[in-house]
Image (cartoon, rainbow over all chains, first blue to last red):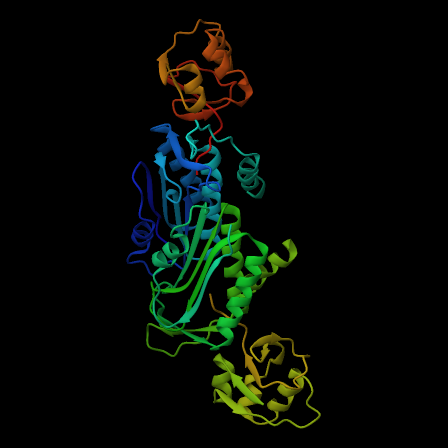
Length: 157
Length: 157
Length: 83
Length: 83
């Protein structure tokens, strides 16, 4: 498998998961598995009007690239795409996209899980909730479960 | 989360992964994670002209539905789509699609992995290789690794 | 009882399906395999490693010790390679 | 040295960035946090649970015992919640 095609972007605009996935696999005959993860904004049972996502410009891209390089070193990937949005996101709209392509499904699945676990805990993005009832929202607290999910890759590695 | 929207199809025609994923999430504000797995036909470094996929009509759909019901019982899924093709598939073309949607990413990832592991070892499909050099192809042998991958869900369960 | 064959089991036997009328001593799917093996060269070849053969009765996977009484359709095929 | 603040650290301090000129005794990122806390109510609030504060020097994550000598940009922010 030739070196991976890697796309990394941090943007306010929505993304087209299908187009990104198609770009990774176009003309390829060596890929057996493509895994696409899309993270969506939930309304938390009607409580939320929107999520506002703040990021650290420059470091966000650099940190995603660092995590992507770790995934490429760990699994034989034929392609990789990570896009993370910032700004105001409405319920039902996409926040993050991870696409991994590989010869076999285990590598594609594991790399996509790893990338999401690491993005959650190391990429400099912060979510603030905007409540549907008009009251001021608050910053989402980091979850111990996300730290634990990222930590398991250290133990397994 | 309301009961899952489940789509199960066995067909000769190609599928549109993006359209299936969009159908699962349309109008939903309770889903946080969508995982899409697409299995593609590899040319095995130029060795293959095509894969021919034979299936057991009736049992194939029933077995996929049985595995889907197991996934729904095990993870809180908000939507589910499984499409498996049969007939002649050219390198680069898609063979199988699994889409899982859930509130959180762990459920969507695990359910998609589980479904692929079980489809591999229990859905009645068989692959025959057609060689690029014109010589007669042979049936693909089942892999011990696939049995092991399916077996780990029993142990973890 | 209708028997259906898939993949190389079908190719080796030389037909996709047939009707079977096994004698009373054939109780389990495994018995049926042993009985079929004796019917000719193609069957012998198809079932030469009989432990690897998978069986479904009325479209549900069963082990070879499953009883076939009442089955409408019994299927024989190699380990699956879909997905 | 440029300091940049994000999320509730930024809100509590009341500005997104500023230039800092800490005295020589401020050697590590943790020292800088302690020094900033003494600068006023907003800083005190931002760093009240200082162990939870994450630090990056020149856009690379560091621990609070990292030395800040030579840093062009030092960032303070809460645990990340992206993805």
